[in-house]
Image 1 (cartoon, rainbow, N blue to C red):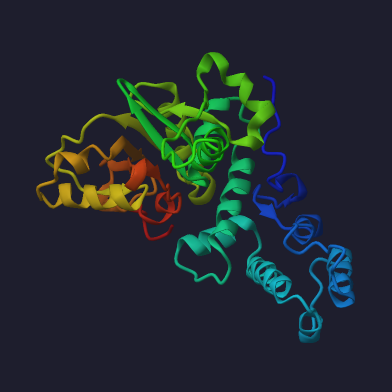
Image 2: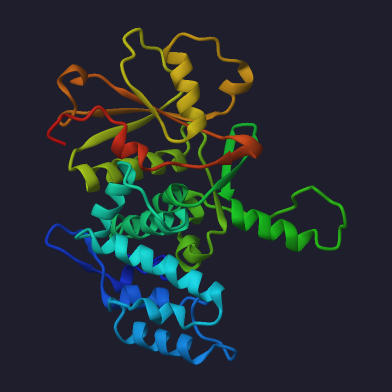
Length: 330
């Protein structure tokens, strides 16, 4: 089996692993943040800024003095440094990236932008999927950390990266003043063309079909299984389904705010409009032989994924870790 490399710019390659296979921050990993353009010195940088950058590049975990930042003239640069340093401090409180992310998922407040959390998700997924040869699963996992835009046509539910769609639309419509129409051409990743993904994995410029019975939906289900096992060490089975028909419906979770709201209303027996029901793109049945609380033994958890305003998916992978009916020992 050929093992392909992917997400070369994620930072995963700069990390170490502990005995359990979880990711441990290294100086090289932290150093990469100080090479980001937001803090990298430019010709106009003052001496204090250049000196601080040199210090952090040489020793990325060095403790700074308050005066190190106060001496920098450009306060925008100071702000950017403070953001990265807050992220560094947060990571230093946990033995692994997984432990840091799980703390965030369970409600630990953060004082840095959510973008850093998305980066953690990507890096952890890169670790989980390291020896995975199925490109469709890698592409499906992009939903976990990048916002997607949905296009529905006949028996297809195509999802593509929102940022890529917007960029292509701007480039194609640059000469069409006042045009609000998105004109994009995103390659569809199918089983027959899946190998095209590897060389362009860092571009996030392919779409995937999440319609029922399609390989893309199955790929997403397999990634969900692996995500849960990596963090919680429980084996689950996730199977796509079309409709919930269960008089003993006991537990559900949404993978986004819209599906959570819709499933809550359905569970409570409230009327849900056709318009809201059409927001639901995918349904799954999740089961576990072990690891669930006693009252949920042998019962399924129903999982939903929906699109919100402007046909956008904002996937919340933390819900798979915090909203399951886990036994107390987990």
